[in-house]
Length: 88
Picture 1 (cartoon, rainbow, N blue to C red):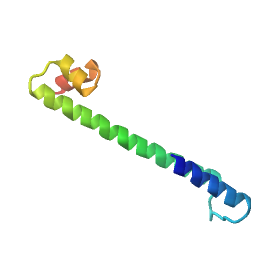
Picture 2 (picture 1 turned 90 degrees about the horizontal axis):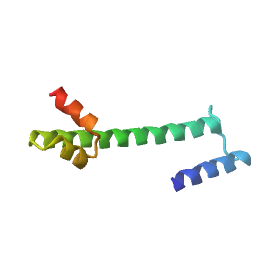
Picture 3 (picture 1 turned 180 degrees about the vertical axis):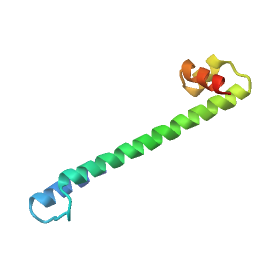
């Protein structure tokens, strides 16, 4: 995150002194691009972690573990475990 802030400050400075010309884009557009990339990475990471939790819960359920224990070990709410049980 620090390198992103440094990059934005550098780009802003260079633009302010006239040393940087961004073809067809404003600094606001560039900032939006950085923000979207950060959001996309966060979403992908969250999706991957959630999928890993669900897969773990499915494996534990298939071993006959109680829904309460599965919820605790997979760090998922009981409602999510119940959905997994009912979907099979």
